[in-house]
Length: 416
Image (cartoon, rainbow, N blue to C red):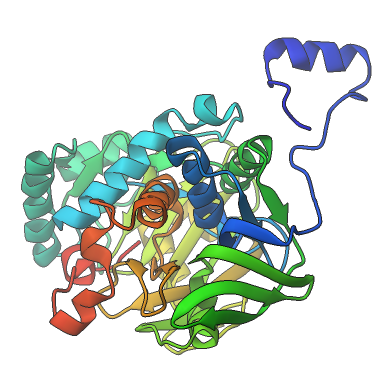
């Protein structure tokens, strides 16, 4: 099942027989009675967790269960930005691990995830941001992450369509990470899914968890719409619905769920070949391979579980982007969507053991989850397999009890 390698020769062979010989990329089996590990959530983070459990730790008796369809949550609803230019050391470490894994992910998975290290700019549009981003450049140098500060003229050279003299939001410089960029969100999920299936793991879609079974403070299994499944360990990787699964398990999480939305313009010819983020106005933009300008903003200001988002955020963000990129004013919106993100108080993730033995949780990525997928999965797999991961150590639930926050919202202005 799906063991054949993808290659230029396979494409040529299938072209000659009208593409009739392609296999399914991953199997869709019925659940077994018991697994060593059950991962709840078949998004990027859940699939990456399963993949590295098998590849690094040799644990392949794994089920990844998903209440909807594979990659149908936030993984398929984001703006695909990849960067690691964070200020705090724990954040920089896990995001740089993710970015470095993205570099070779297509070769590793034998699946083209369309990683594009096109470069990423974070615009400084106030004196406060200038000081903050220069501080980040110095921190990144100590962390071994390549970033640099560039002038408004250099910004203009990289992004000719930008207006650096906006009356409300002038561009005063930028934090530039040349190896930042984008990848294809669907392909990341599909590539991990195919690799997991090849290792003998079960990916079970349309299988909602309705209960978590414990005995003497230890997890023993889950109840699902496809029957009871026993497990030795349980990894909860369900983003905005993490608090729901935690409640089923008998504990609470310090997260809030709210909508984050994005939208794309009609396709146009290539006009911008880098990713530009403007955190002062919570706006960011890049151009997809299809020619659409991909735009996004900040989260809604209230808790909700919609996958739409509110119109006032579109208006506010588009207004700022029109000033910064005047070309945007001439375009029509093609489509708009939202995802349900999980926000912690310090805007940093949770990768942690829980009060229930054998249950591990990976959540709280907020608006920056896609860029972290490989690093998150690598760290979560190590945590599940060994009970400890250096990459995840400072992202435990203990930090909220002890006040050891990793406050990237202060560092970055916004945790995208």
